[in-house]
Image 1 (cartoon, rainbow, N blue to C red):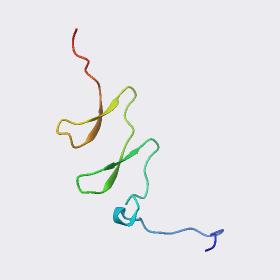
Image 2: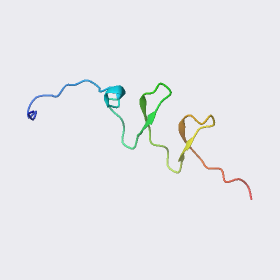
Image 3: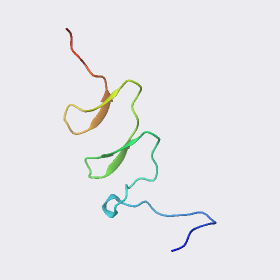
Image 4: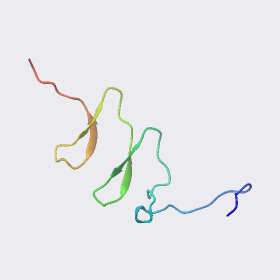
Amino acid sequence: MGTIATGVWNGTTIAVNKGGTGLTTYNRGALLVGTSGNSLAALAVGAAGKFLQVNDDGNDLVYGDIDGGTY
């Protein structure tokens, strides 16, 4: 094994079933989450003050507010 010291590295995306993510890029703060197609997706960082929670059908992660009710 050697070290690439010059030139441009070119490679292909490593699939999830081969131990990779199947993604070529994702943004700062993103979370890797499982999708309904048994792959991975990058969930973008939420807005300031929002909480990460499960949606109404219990299958997906979403950012939202917490409702503390009325007292």
